[in-house]
Image 1 (cartoon, rainbow, N blue to C red):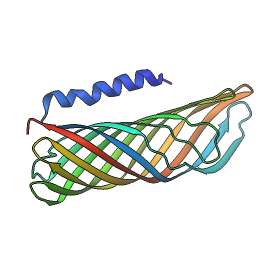
Image 2 (cartoon, helix red, strand yellow; image 1 turned 120 degrees about the vertical axis):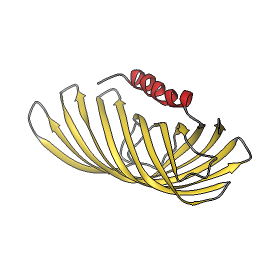
Image 3 (tube, one colour; image 1 turned 90 degrees about the vertical axis):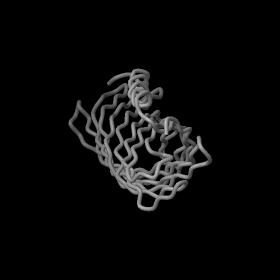
Image 4 (cartoon, one colour; image 1 turned 180 degrees about the vertical axis):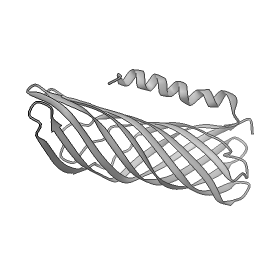
Length: 204
């Protein structure tokens, strides 16, 4: 698996390329996960034994940075690309993991004025998660999709407040290792996340 540092660098490059060539806005936001659950199947490569279990993540916040188009314009379509950093923790784990996600949101305005836009649309997420303590290591990638709904509120000529909530359906898979063995795992993940952010608009 690639190191988390390399993943972050590559994602940052991907984020700021469109910033240089498009009008839109750059912002920061806070994600807050709510009731995310997972069903996991883990396979021991040494013995071939499979185990299945379910778990629920604690409600937690994180930090995100994003680029968005058409924040201050009365256009139907808008696109948002974000990098999100979180530390998911199961209600039964002692430690939390480190996770970075790329989010692609396609916003279709259903009610628009000069200052306010209500939108709905699909959101695609791709992530990398790593967990490491003294006895257990795990690395995995995630792919997901789900509906999102949100509102953008323009504050004057330069700033926009953005709020949205989504419900994702995701698959995560990877490898794990302990002192006594190693193996692979797959998880089916569902749950909602709310996001609140502030954007600075330019070139509009």
